[in-house]
Image (tube, rainbow, N blue to C red; front, side):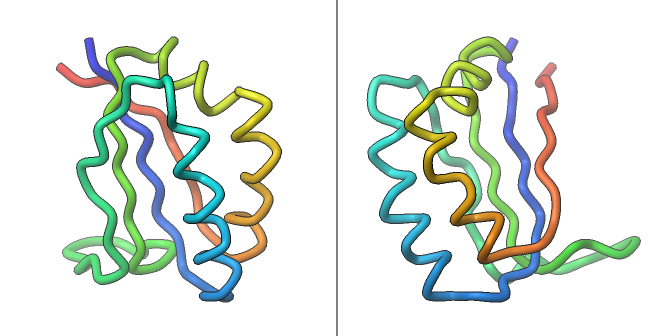
Length: 95
């Protein structure tokens, strides 16, 4: 069953977020991942989101997602995203 990393946040430092994007790409090498959504212009229909940036990445399963997210390579740069944005990230399993 596929698992998805869903990020919703507001951007506070565009330069730092650009640095994060540059650094994050190489951390995906060797991992089976499919980017489904990367936008800074999500439209809210209900509730109060953290911001207008939404990222959805699809992995074959939760173990594959955690293998990437918990990897030393990604953990070394995730702080760039935290410094550039404010919001949340969740793991959800597909159907």
